[in-house]
Length: 74
Image (cartoon, rainbow, N blue to C red; front, side):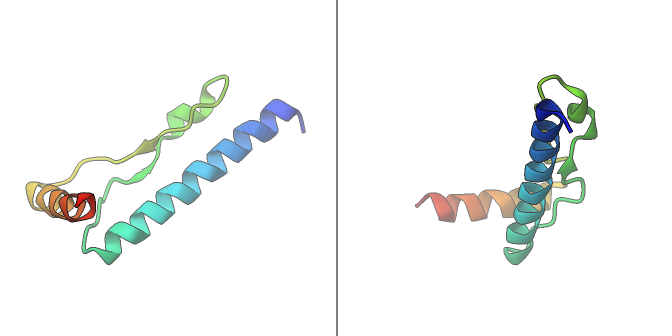
């Protein structure tokens, strides 16, 4: 395994873990982002620049997210 390949694999794993952690913490606040995922297209970049796709959500979910973030920002 090359160093570059290992770095790409590590970046993918880190993004998948972060995505799962975000989904879990959002769920505890009553928020579900149905499209939350790691963007597979970004796996192919050199060097890897893996992105978490937050996806689309309805207005009610957006309002819940705003309320949680406002409470956290205080």
